[in-house]
Amino acid sequence: MTYSLRKITLTTLMRGRADASITRSPDSETEELDEVYLHTVTIHGREFHKYSIDNQIAFEPVDDEEAERLDLQHRVFSRIFDGRLIFPPIRRLRRVLDCGYGAGSWAVDVATQYPDCKVIGLDISPHKNPDDMPENLWLQVDDLNRRFTFPSNHFDLVHSSLLATGINRARWPSYLADIKRILKPGGWVQLIEIYFNVQSDNGSITEEHALRRWSTQFMRSYEGTKDLRVGTRLNNLLLAEGLEEVDARMIPLPLSAWSNDPRMRDIGMLNRENINKLLPSLALYPLTQISRVPQQDFRELIAQARQEAETANLKAYFPLYVCIGRKPR
Ligand SMILES: C[S@@+](CC[C@H](N)C(=O)[O-])C[C@H]1O[C@@H](n2cnc3c(N)ncnc32)[C@H](O)[C@@H]1O
Image (cartoon, protein in one colour):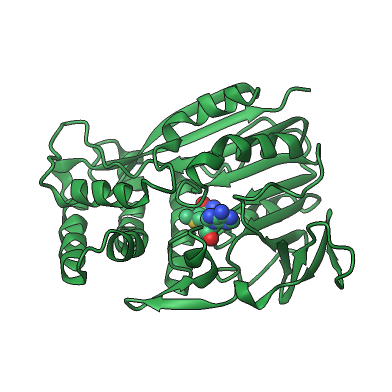
């Protein structure tokens, strides 16, 4: 069952059910959102999506604090990408899908910048929705780990940003095959992933550093279910699905303002606050609930990791992978 929401009207995209009452969102049949998708649970003071936790879909908080962080992160990305929202050379944008829209910052910006384009955002949790929605933006609720119900040859662009912790490890090939199917011939996919394995080009981060321990424990917690290294192989996955003009880049995402390069220093300065919030936010559930790290140890790890992120001579960064590919005409 896929659910769709528009402003306060919560609806769901139908998966082959002819009998339920239907409200329409563009390009899909919808019905009222099942209450099961609205429940949250509080863990160590943060709010999580109960359905996602119960079904091992996503383990990030869904509270206002996380929505604000995602919006801030979107501003960091805007700075990195010089204000560009869309990387492939698309002449006319009519229909766009944003997979895992989060706080909706990217989807809202695209809908605002392209008022003639229909933008659909899909997420498993409707809790971080933007307050102001452009008329040409529709939001839906569904699990991207399930096969898509959108029609074939439909979208000019599918955007998927930071889904490594949400797409199941074995799902990636069929996820990208689904994206290819719903793209129009000649349509583009745009993928963005952070590789959370902290790096430093001067080799100064050792196994003892809290940032390294944060990365190792974070990635280990997800090992059974998700592929947190997927960013490094997006190009191979797209090529394997038969996409063309595949182009992949790695951009260092500095954890703070350590760079001598003015542009990178600027990005690091902006990213500092995001990282300060990201370190506890992303790791809280995986470390304390999956890997059973005691809460006091978790707090100490985060406090040290935050300090190290701001230590200029460590020159710490997360690799940010950006990959595009085109469906053959
Ligand atoms: C890290 S946030 C990224 C949000 C946004 N794409 C961005 O770049 O700011 C991941 C989002 O994807 C959603 N998500 C994760 N796994 C999902 C899945 N299997 N199906 C649908 N949404 C999912 C989460 O609920 C969350 O809102």
